[in-house]
Image 1 (tube, rainbow, N blue to C red):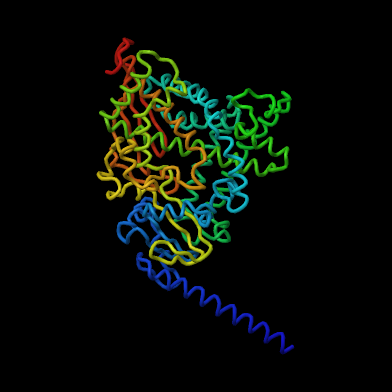
Image 2: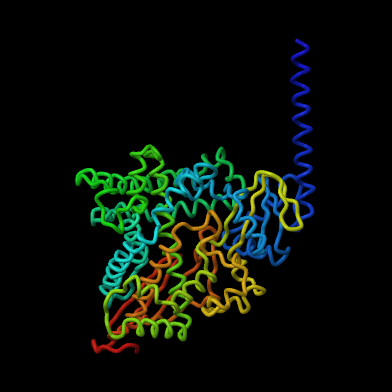
Length: 530
């Protein structure tokens, strides 16, 4: 009896000594890294107990106050902030730092082990598989859908002319949602799915609020506590709506292929049907037959790409419209470029047309610099490592403040100004490649960034060809909430004047919404700009 007790006692003693030494070493290493004052046990937890808008400001201020490497400690882990491009390159380029933890784990009830939140071998397998779905030949196929859905969006906007106030937030968001469904998913959104889609969009908003809600309440970082909260109950219902929508998309595509006896490897056209060059959902369904992914895995990736494929693009488009509304000279140059490509024609843009929109591309890049849809990304490091002049404790999370990086005056002089020429090739050569990260970088960069750029070019070019945007909200009026980057206050755009016939539009966006009040102020004389 005595001997087992001694063994247990020695084991507990050794474990205690090990944990103490480990924690003490971590504290010693972290103490050499600058950062805000921390208190025993709770560390910097109290810094996170602030409204989302204030938390965003706090995170962005850290690199200014403490340098390009800084440290924060909370009850549930340590965060090492890194805002130097050369150090960010080390982190994002290495598979050693590929892991994700906070805040991505808050998305797991929704996205499970999808590409955004998975780690290790599963991430590697899925990334390799899904990269094929964004091959250039597939994007060529998608370009036609981009233009068709954009025309539908503009037609809906036109129908609102004369109304005192029209909320076109659903129109903007539905446009990106329709595009994602009909390209990557190969599913046409019929009228009977609108109710489900509306619930889906509302559920995404709830999930976004839930992530921010947990971020600013350290105690809710623990699932054992969060599951008893009111927000958890609200989130549970939202998750049901999210999964109903994506499950229907998968079922409809699966049934379509089965009923029509389509083998997507053999029966599709040359551009779309070559093995390894399938639309995303078709690719997943084919690999299910090969035993490379199961039904749950398909749902994970459809959930992930339906979210990432429309929500961040809708956000980016809203900020883009606000930005160019405030820059009349820039807007004129965009229109001039459109006129040089299309002349007086109102034909739809081709892929070649989109590729030729060089100045518009500069403007999109500058808007993404000022207003990155994802303002902060994080990576996890399991083992002790060296970064620059510091030794980073094991089990730390790297925080990469992209918004702060993009607004750094040392990298971007006059950083708050909208200057598209920053992205001319000769100017890009002067900057570190990792000083601009709207789509992240390295092995875990955004797999759909070319898709997003083509989509944004299509929507913005078509809108500018027909309307002139004038502002109400100034960039200085904006405040933000973290993850994803959304405006916490109204964004207003006023008097979107019809270019081909006189019209006035009152518009405002909230978060990534756009409200329009359109009315005719004259006849239908075709004039290019009035």
